[in-house]
Image 1 (cartoon, rainbow, N blue to C red):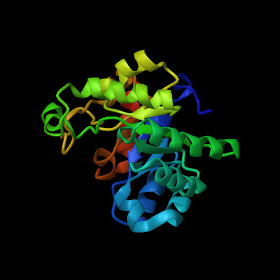
Image 2 (cartoon, rainbow, N blue to C red; image 1 turned 45 degrees about the vertical axis):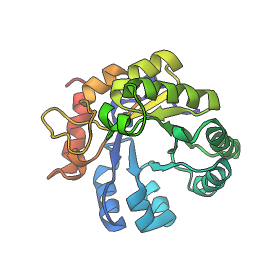
Image 3 (cartoon, helix red, strand yellow; image 1 turned 60 degrees about the vertical axis):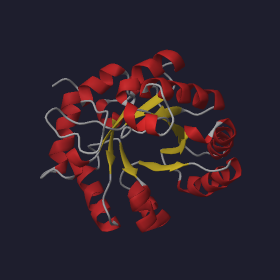
Length: 242
Protein backbone atom coordinates (compact mmCIF):
# COMPACT_ATOMS: atom_id res chain seq x y z
CA UNK A 1 0.00 0.00 0.00
CA UNK A 2 1.07 3.59 -0.58
CA UNK A 3 1.77 5.88 2.39
CA UNK A 4 -1.27 7.33 4.11
CA UNK A 5 -1.75 11.03 3.31
CA UNK A 6 -0.88 11.96 6.89
CA UNK A 7 2.55 10.40 6.42
CA UNK A 8 3.41 12.36 3.27
CA UNK A 9 5.59 15.44 3.62
CA UNK A 10 4.70 18.58 1.63
CA UNK A 11 7.64 17.83 -0.67
CA UNK A 12 6.32 14.30 -1.33
CA UNK A 13 2.92 15.77 -2.17
CA UNK A 14 4.30 18.00 -4.93
CA UNK A 15 3.99 16.56 -8.45
CA UNK A 16 5.55 18.52 -11.31
CA UNK A 17 4.00 18.24 -14.77
CA UNK A 18 6.79 17.76 -17.32
CA UNK A 19 4.89 19.40 -20.18
CA UNK A 20 8.06 19.60 -22.25
CA UNK A 21 8.53 18.43 -25.85
CA UNK A 22 11.69 16.32 -25.66
CA UNK A 23 13.44 13.82 -23.42
CA UNK A 24 16.54 16.03 -23.32
CA UNK A 25 14.61 18.95 -21.84
CA UNK A 26 12.60 16.71 -19.52
CA UNK A 27 15.65 14.90 -18.15
CA UNK A 28 17.46 18.19 -17.61
CA UNK A 29 14.45 19.45 -15.66
CA UNK A 30 14.37 16.20 -13.68
CA UNK A 31 18.00 16.70 -12.71
CA UNK A 32 17.19 20.21 -11.46
CA UNK A 33 14.18 19.01 -9.44
CA UNK A 34 15.47 15.70 -8.05
CA UNK A 35 15.17 15.67 -4.27
CA UNK A 36 12.93 18.74 -4.30
CA UNK A 37 9.64 17.18 -5.47
CA UNK A 38 7.75 13.96 -4.89
CA UNK A 39 6.95 12.96 -8.46
CA UNK A 40 7.19 14.02 -12.08
CA UNK A 41 4.15 13.76 -14.35
CA UNK A 42 4.58 12.44 -17.89
CA UNK A 43 1.62 13.19 -20.13
CA UNK A 44 0.55 12.12 -23.59
CA UNK A 45 2.72 14.53 -25.57
CA UNK A 46 5.97 13.56 -23.93
CA UNK A 47 5.18 9.85 -23.76
CA UNK A 48 4.22 9.72 -27.44
CA UNK A 49 7.36 11.63 -28.39
CA UNK A 50 9.85 9.66 -26.30
CA UNK A 51 8.26 6.35 -25.29
CA UNK A 52 8.83 3.79 -22.53
CA UNK A 53 12.63 3.88 -22.52
CA UNK A 54 12.50 7.55 -21.58
CA UNK A 55 10.18 6.81 -18.65
CA UNK A 56 12.64 4.23 -17.34
CA UNK A 57 15.45 6.76 -17.54
CA UNK A 58 13.35 9.41 -15.83
CA UNK A 59 12.40 7.10 -12.96
CA UNK A 60 16.07 6.65 -12.14
CA UNK A 61 15.90 10.29 -11.03
CA UNK A 62 12.38 10.87 -9.64
CA UNK A 63 9.24 8.68 -9.30
CA UNK A 64 6.83 9.06 -12.23
CA UNK A 65 3.10 9.64 -12.53
CA UNK A 66 2.18 8.28 -15.97
CA UNK A 67 -0.73 10.51 -16.95
CA UNK A 68 -2.16 8.82 -20.04
CA UNK A 69 -5.87 8.84 -19.07
CA UNK A 70 -6.68 5.52 -20.72
CA UNK A 71 -10.28 5.28 -21.97
CA UNK A 72 -11.38 2.38 -24.16
CA UNK A 73 -13.19 -0.95 -23.96
CA UNK A 74 -12.26 -3.01 -20.87
CA UNK A 75 -10.06 -5.56 -22.66
CA UNK A 76 -8.06 -2.90 -24.48
CA UNK A 77 -7.46 -0.91 -21.29
CA UNK A 78 -6.42 -3.98 -19.33
CA UNK A 79 -3.96 -5.09 -22.03
CA UNK A 80 -2.55 -1.60 -22.42
CA UNK A 81 -2.02 -1.40 -18.67
CA UNK A 82 -0.29 -4.77 -18.60
CA UNK A 83 2.28 -3.32 -20.99
CA UNK A 84 2.61 0.06 -19.26
CA UNK A 85 2.88 -1.49 -15.81
CA UNK A 86 6.16 -3.10 -16.84
CA UNK A 87 7.55 0.42 -16.29
CA UNK A 88 6.26 0.31 -12.68
CA UNK A 89 5.29 4.01 -12.46
CA UNK A 90 4.33 5.32 -9.03
CA UNK A 91 0.90 6.37 -10.35
CA UNK A 92 -1.08 5.69 -13.53
CA UNK A 93 -4.60 6.72 -14.51
CA UNK A 94 -7.67 5.87 -16.54
CA UNK A 95 -10.86 7.82 -17.24
CA UNK A 96 -13.74 7.10 -14.86
CA UNK A 97 -16.04 7.84 -17.80
CA UNK A 98 -15.04 4.44 -19.17
CA UNK A 99 -17.56 2.91 -16.78
CA UNK A 100 -17.58 0.13 -14.17
CA UNK A 101 -16.42 -2.72 -16.39
CA UNK A 102 -13.47 -0.75 -17.74
CA UNK A 103 -12.47 0.42 -14.25
CA UNK A 104 -12.67 -3.13 -12.91
CA UNK A 105 -10.50 -4.42 -15.77
CA UNK A 106 -7.93 -1.72 -14.98
CA UNK A 107 -8.00 -2.62 -11.29
CA UNK A 108 -7.41 -6.29 -12.15
CA UNK A 109 -4.28 -5.41 -14.10
CA UNK A 110 -2.89 -3.21 -11.34
CA UNK A 111 -3.67 -5.74 -8.59
CA UNK A 112 -1.82 -8.44 -10.53
CA UNK A 113 1.12 -6.09 -10.94
CA UNK A 114 1.21 -5.25 -7.24
CA UNK A 115 0.89 -8.94 -6.29
CA UNK A 116 4.05 -9.53 -8.34
CA UNK A 117 5.91 -6.85 -6.37
CA UNK A 118 4.98 -3.69 -8.28
CA UNK A 119 4.23 -0.40 -6.57
CA UNK A 120 1.85 1.33 -9.00
CA UNK A 121 -1.35 2.89 -7.70
CA UNK A 122 -4.32 3.36 -10.03
CA UNK A 123 -6.23 6.65 -10.15
CA UNK A 124 -9.40 7.45 -12.09
CA UNK A 125 -9.86 10.82 -13.78
CA UNK A 126 -13.15 12.47 -12.78
CA UNK A 127 -13.77 15.88 -14.42
CA UNK A 128 -10.91 17.66 -16.18
CA UNK A 129 -9.95 20.95 -14.53
CA UNK A 130 -10.25 22.65 -17.94
CA UNK A 131 -14.02 22.00 -17.89
CA UNK A 132 -16.41 24.39 -16.17
CA UNK A 133 -20.19 24.14 -15.88
CA UNK A 134 -20.78 25.71 -19.29
CA UNK A 135 -18.40 23.29 -20.99
CA UNK A 136 -20.03 20.32 -19.27
CA UNK A 137 -23.47 21.53 -20.35
CA UNK A 138 -22.26 21.48 -23.95
CA UNK A 139 -21.32 17.83 -23.38
CA UNK A 140 -24.78 16.99 -22.07
CA UNK A 141 -24.10 17.21 -18.31
CA UNK A 142 -26.58 19.65 -16.79
CA UNK A 143 -25.28 19.50 -13.22
CA UNK A 144 -22.35 21.05 -11.42
CA UNK A 145 -18.79 19.80 -12.04
CA UNK A 146 -18.40 18.89 -8.37
CA UNK A 147 -21.49 16.66 -8.40
CA UNK A 148 -20.27 14.77 -11.46
CA UNK A 149 -16.78 14.43 -9.98
CA UNK A 150 -18.19 12.98 -6.77
CA UNK A 151 -20.31 10.47 -8.69
CA UNK A 152 -17.25 9.35 -10.68
CA UNK A 153 -15.19 9.10 -7.49
CA UNK A 154 -17.73 6.79 -5.88
CA UNK A 155 -17.78 4.67 -9.03
CA UNK A 156 -13.98 4.46 -9.03
CA UNK A 157 -13.86 3.48 -5.36
CA UNK A 158 -16.46 0.75 -5.88
CA UNK A 159 -14.33 -0.64 -8.71
CA UNK A 160 -11.25 -0.75 -6.45
CA UNK A 161 -9.20 2.24 -7.63
CA UNK A 162 -6.80 3.77 -5.13
CA UNK A 163 -8.03 7.30 -5.70
CA UNK A 164 -8.98 9.90 -8.27
CA UNK A 165 -7.72 12.85 -10.24
CA UNK A 166 -10.02 15.77 -9.42
CA UNK A 167 -10.08 19.51 -8.96
CA UNK A 168 -9.07 20.72 -5.53
CA UNK A 169 -12.57 22.18 -5.35
CA UNK A 170 -13.95 18.63 -5.17
CA UNK A 171 -11.23 17.10 -2.98
CA UNK A 172 -13.01 17.82 0.31
CA UNK A 173 -16.35 16.33 -0.67
CA UNK A 174 -14.65 13.27 -2.16
CA UNK A 175 -12.58 12.79 1.00
CA UNK A 176 -15.74 13.05 3.10
CA UNK A 177 -17.63 10.56 0.93
CA UNK A 178 -14.85 8.08 0.18
CA UNK A 179 -12.51 8.37 3.18
CA UNK A 180 -9.01 9.70 3.79
CA UNK A 181 -7.27 6.63 2.35
CA UNK A 182 -8.92 7.15 -1.04
CA UNK A 183 -6.35 9.48 -2.56
CA UNK A 184 -7.02 12.73 -4.39
CA UNK A 185 -4.53 14.10 -6.92
CA UNK A 186 -5.38 17.64 -7.93
CA UNK A 187 -4.15 19.47 -11.06
CA UNK A 188 -4.88 23.15 -11.63
CA UNK A 189 -2.68 24.29 -8.74
CA UNK A 190 -1.33 27.82 -9.11
CA UNK A 191 0.70 29.76 -6.53
CA UNK A 192 -0.88 33.05 -5.49
CA UNK A 193 -0.51 35.72 -8.19
CA UNK A 194 0.17 33.30 -11.05
CA UNK A 195 -2.06 33.31 -14.16
CA UNK A 196 -4.59 30.47 -14.46
CA UNK A 197 -3.70 29.89 -18.16
CA UNK A 198 -5.92 27.10 -19.63
CA UNK A 199 -7.29 25.87 -16.31
CA UNK A 200 -10.87 26.83 -15.43
CA UNK A 201 -10.93 25.67 -11.80
CA UNK A 202 -7.72 26.44 -9.94
CA UNK A 203 -6.52 26.83 -6.35
CA UNK A 204 -3.33 27.78 -4.52
CA UNK A 205 -1.19 25.03 -2.91
CA UNK A 206 -2.12 26.02 0.63
CA UNK A 207 -5.82 26.14 -0.23
CA UNK A 208 -5.65 22.75 -1.96
CA UNK A 209 -4.10 21.05 1.06
CA UNK A 210 -6.74 22.57 3.30
CA UNK A 211 -9.46 21.30 0.97
CA UNK A 212 -8.13 17.74 1.16
CA UNK A 213 -5.76 17.15 -1.75
CA UNK A 214 -3.31 14.27 -1.35
CA UNK A 215 -0.99 15.28 -4.20
CA UNK A 216 -0.76 18.65 -5.96
CA UNK A 217 0.18 18.94 -9.64
CA UNK A 218 2.05 22.08 -10.65
CA UNK A 219 3.42 22.60 -14.15
CA UNK A 220 4.40 25.85 -15.82
CA UNK A 221 4.83 27.89 -12.61
CA UNK A 222 7.82 25.58 -11.96
CA UNK A 223 9.00 24.37 -15.37
CA UNK A 224 8.82 27.83 -16.99
CA UNK A 225 10.36 29.65 -14.02
CA UNK A 226 13.79 31.25 -14.35
CA UNK A 227 14.91 28.96 -11.51
CA UNK A 228 12.69 25.85 -11.42
CA UNK A 229 14.35 24.45 -8.29
CA UNK A 230 13.74 27.68 -6.39
CA UNK A 231 10.15 27.79 -7.66
CA UNK A 232 9.58 24.26 -6.40
CA UNK A 233 11.09 25.11 -3.03
CA UNK A 234 8.84 28.16 -2.84
CA UNK A 235 5.74 26.05 -3.39
CA UNK A 236 6.86 23.53 -0.76
CA UNK A 237 7.36 26.44 1.63
CA UNK A 238 3.86 27.68 0.85
CA UNK A 239 2.50 24.20 1.53
CA UNK A 240 4.32 24.19 4.86
CA UNK A 241 2.80 27.57 5.72
CA UNK A 242 6.14 29.39 5.66
